[in-house]
Image (tube, rainbow, N blue to C red):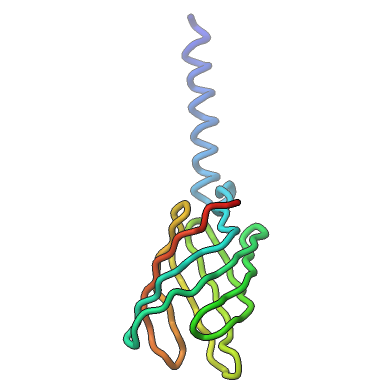
Length: 130
C-alpha cells in the first residue's frame, strides 16, 4: 500500500508535464483533414454565390481549385488547428479573394474578402467522400 501514493504522484507528474507541453504548443494535435470537395454559400453586398472548392492537404498546407462565378483558379492556403485560410487570384485582374474561418468536421464558416466586390460571409459543407 505504501507504493500507491508514490505511484499516483508519478502519474500526476507525467500528466502535468504533458499538459504543460501541450499548452506551450509542443504537442499540438494535427489539423483536421479538409481534403475533398466543398460546396460553399457566400453572402455579400452584391448578392450570393455558390462556389465549389476542391482541397488537397499536406499537413497544414492547402492547395486546390476554385470554380464559381469568378471563373476558375488555383487555390493556396493553410489550416492551423480548426482555423482555415485560403485564397486565389481572380483571372485577368490583380484582385485576390481571401477566405478566413473555422472548420468543424464536414462544415466550415467564416468571412471572405472579395477584393473589389467587398466583404462577406461564407458557410460550407464537404461532399461525402466516394
